[in-house]
Image (cartoon, rainbow, N blue to C red; front, side, top):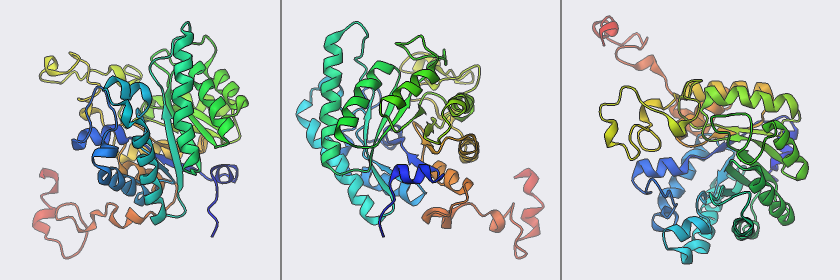
Length: 355
């Protein structure tokens, strides 16, 4: 059976589910340092990355993402390990392909992201960015992937560099962009953000949209603005799995009013990035997002920071799919207090309201 490609699926009206969130999940599990967020775990504990990729696949992700987010030259320079740049990228791609052999219908994706060095008036930084994307996309293309996913770009000029190089490499490209609290334009542009996304699509990006910073509640209205103007389904939305709100629209500046000890946080009073636990969304909120995003016309959806396999499974099931992991989806019928199985003890069921 020939595997269907990304655009073949999207253009047939089929939603494609993407699972990222590796960075935060690896930090939670104790394999990655918050702050620099460099994915050295790819080389230090490849078996852990492999297992998380497998978990996402079992829970219904259509796209298996090579974990090279923040695995670019600038990040490796910051930790003094530029010599590990190519081995890290190649190993991440190998891991995605390895898991892909177990799930032959899945799409394999290379990953690029923001560099944090772009400045509109600095030509040298733009040359460095060109080099960063040229290296990573070169390795990605050599690995024979099905697509490239670019994430968390807040400067549209940086996106344009990535699009140019990906187009030259001939690999389908998904671009996820970030809006900050202003939520109407990118950092280096005064244009309406949807107009910039349309232009990026015209330049050669196959799918464009939003990712990161905004959770389901605050991303969905923005995503609907995009799908109002881009109506071919080639729109992406993968929010963080945190409960952002109109008063705290972006997870990068959230404050937990109930926190006992704000002075303990790395940046006093700011929950990002290591005290976001109270804001984590439920699987049902991600499922609701998936339904509404697809209904609005965004056919490339998924998770970003904070997202975990159970979120992905709920999204897949909300679209009517049965995943390998659906065998373990919640079934409360046998629960001692909340179940309805006739063999359960009334002594416990009658106590449920006090449980």
